Length: 451
Image (cartoon, rainbow, N blue to C red):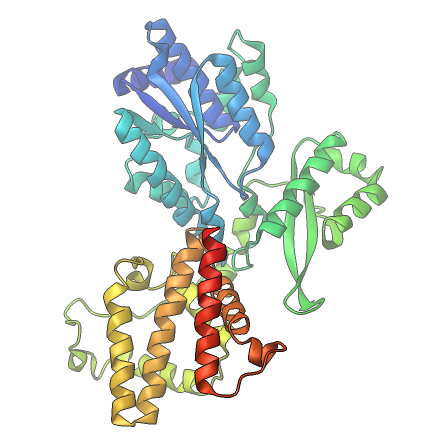
């Protein structure tokens, strides 16, 4: 049975011509690249396969090193692709987080595959179809091939297949524990941060260094705050049942280590490790049924919505938000939310260039409100100008350029720097001297910047 599946896999791979494998360092993608390399080598064209590995805080470094080492051993061209920006995009951790993450990663890898004239492939197998895998939808939408699944290979088939290789290093992969993105350790709906991801990775590395094989350190937030906005979180350790006794022998050391990493409490899940366990929480975190705008509604023609559920929901929603009070920090969070994968389609697609005209328009409308002497109108228009500033800052933050805090810092420094007669020990007699001082400071700043 396995021989037939492997024969089918070989035919599929030969039909690709050239392959670019999304190599995570896990069992499935490692088997795929090793098997494909063997197929192409027997055909006399070992260079027909290459690999790319996504690198970022959500992926354990030892898995990335394992992927690079395998390619180096087999003589396969391999590169890492930095996808660190995705952590910020998905920090609110929606239920379909994996879809948005894979959509972004596969989109980046697909561009490279197209440039090389290769078929982009992943390590999805037949067993993956039985679990909640929104990432598979992203792969299908972007035309990513899944040859292991197409050949009907299960996880057990793949481990058996690895044991048939002559190379001992490849054979050893058959006994490697299942791997997954570090973000899967955080329950849906709880914020993903680099702090949590680092703590999870370091905790799992420590436990593995003590001889534990299959380890998951789940990170759960605890109600309440330590200080300011600092969250408290708890470690829930999942192990194979037969390894729990081993863990208890060094439990005090483990607790001390994990607490030093930031975990407030350290617990062990008595039901043990279970693949896809966090997906059992989905039912309690999914959004309720949403009311859809009918296809017959034309944008701007609200009359078509009258008398239906939509207007009732809008009235309820408007009443609810009018009763809320918002701060500047709330506003920044609102814009960030709009840019999330499950946010507003229009806001998500905006760039610095696409927003240029809106920044000018909103500034002009604020000027008109000033000329009209309409204070209420001016308040609204200044809010629209602020929207443009925060939206540009959010786009920059997603690109890793700067944040709204950097904008505030820059502006604050400038105001203090150019007002030594207010914040320093310099005196001016009036407006003219204040303006002269401002200009002199500007010149000095440019001179220092140039030097």
